[in-house]
Amino acid sequence: MSKLVTIIFGVFLLFSIGLNVILLNDLRVEKKEPDDIKEKVGRHILVSSEEPTIAEIQDIEQLQDSNPAFYQNARNGDKVLAYSDKVVIYRESEDLIVSVTVVNRARTIQESNE
Image 1 (tube, rainbow, N blue to C red):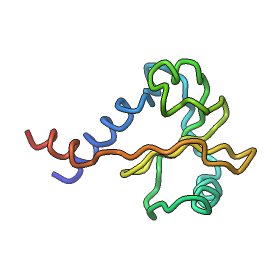
Image 2 (cartoon, helix red, strand yellow):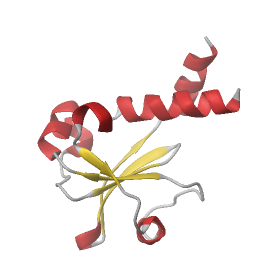
Image 3 (cartoon, rainbow, N blue to C red):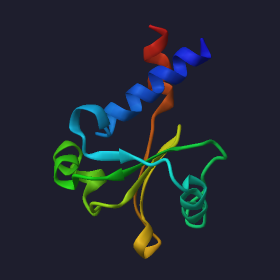
């Protein structure tokens, strides 16, 4: 049951904040140096010890159309770190947190139980 909740949560997270990697092709999932990026982000904001999904923004205009408030100050090349409780946009070139949004896990878990 917990794997199902995790999978449903992951799918919900990706679609709810506009990180539709497969359909929009506007983010590239990062496989290199995730610990370095996590460490840099962790200097600015409290994050859990979980392994986030890390992606790089490829088409900011398309993302801004899908979620203007969250992506307002983001740029192509910024990193998106998706945790279970929050999503962070990080600009590595300036060592800057660009945007943060909170993920409503209670709603996702409730929807999966219906």
